[in-house]
Image (cartoon, rainbow, N blue to C red; front, side, top):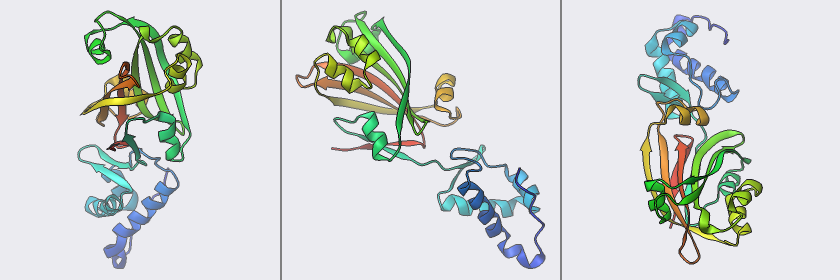
Length: 245
């Protein structure tokens, strides 16, 4: 627990908020709290530094202007997280995106099963409702920190061995290549925002008050055949979407 700060002398009162900002700045640099973590409340900081809350607010405001923290009305102050730009282009690949930011990509497969296409999936894949499709749900990581939660649907008719390829290959591109689809590109993306469900918040390690960016994507092969319909959820402000021509 941080040590209680001594009460300032009268001659220091004009600069005490700067001293508070300096102390908190150093603690943030040392990882306490970590990126995305909540700072103590104004009342707790006022007690720690033996000042009133207005003085604490001045110090926090300075850190917010520097971009070190984010102040959420009614929820408190949080250490700002590094934002990863995710470029929505015709051939965006997860591992390439993460490595572009000098991070180590990783992931965890949550589900890989064959199901029957419900109406929304059937429309996305341009297949009949009830057709067999392969569902892959995956948690994407950057240096071990969750940055995406994606649900991918593939027509089972794409090729024999697709389920095994998705299980055995290191990524979707390699799995599709294994069944003869050498390349695919994004045909359309639709982006919305909404609060996370309890499950999404737990997987992405975010509070339920933090919105998600939700991208609905359709990918096609060289002949224009739909090969994948996906739903990707990105935690804000950890990720921001950038549209490229």
